[in-house]
Amino acid sequence: MPEFRPLSTEDHKYCLEIWRELSDHYEHPIGGGWNEVKISRELEEHHGIGAFDESGKLEAFCIYRKVPGLIEIMLLATGYRTHRMGAMRSLIRSLIEELNPEDVLWLEVHAGNLPAIALYESLGLKLCGERPNYYEDGGKALLFEYKPLQ
Ligand SMILES: CC(C)(COP(=O)(O)OP(=O)(O)OC[C@H]1O[C@@H](n2cnc3c(N)ncnc32)[C@H](O)[C@@H]1OP(=O)(O)O)[C@@H](O)C(=O)NCCC(=O)NCCS
Image (cartoon, rainbow, N blue to C red; front, side):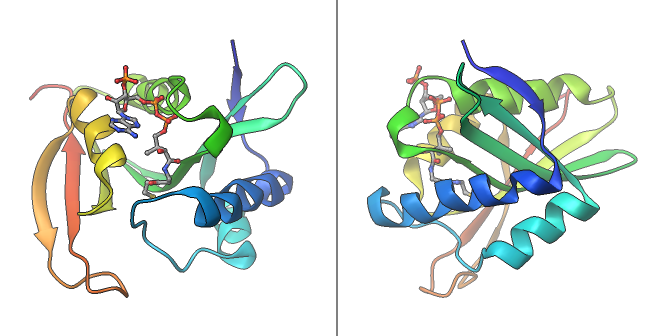
């Protein structure tokens, strides 16, 4: 059973490792443009939560911004060796549990990223908008939200 804890800025290198490995192994399009500087800045200025295995290795992470009334997930990924073991479902659920009744959780995803879309739908997130031609490959972004009262 992984241990869940907030990420520190120091953890950015482990997030980056997961992200880079995924670029070689993931068969679906994901939004690009994430690099060491951007990940470490997000963790410095905003929030992250990670799932760690018993040896302390990061298995999955979720980086998000939080303002009153809104949690916006900026980046999430599970190390490819740990895919489909429930790590991301648990991490997103823990963010949903932080929401007050009137709050919204919000994120965007590449329309071709079918595993991520299946995950969000299984958690009760609802499609709430689209951004055509949003990604570098011309792909559309889908916007998903979760409202506790919906
Ligand atoms: C999308 C991603 C985060 C899912 O992480 P994960 O830890 O493997 O997901 P979980 O094991 O928690 O899956 C929970 C549910 O999501 C759905 N799901 C996850 N992967 C799926 C797949 N490959 N195909 C279909 N459904 C999938 C299923 O409903 C699954 O439940 P089930 O296994 O009981 O059927 C992972 O594939 C990943 O890291 N992808 C690359 C990064 C990315 O796409 N980030 C999102 C955009 S920033």
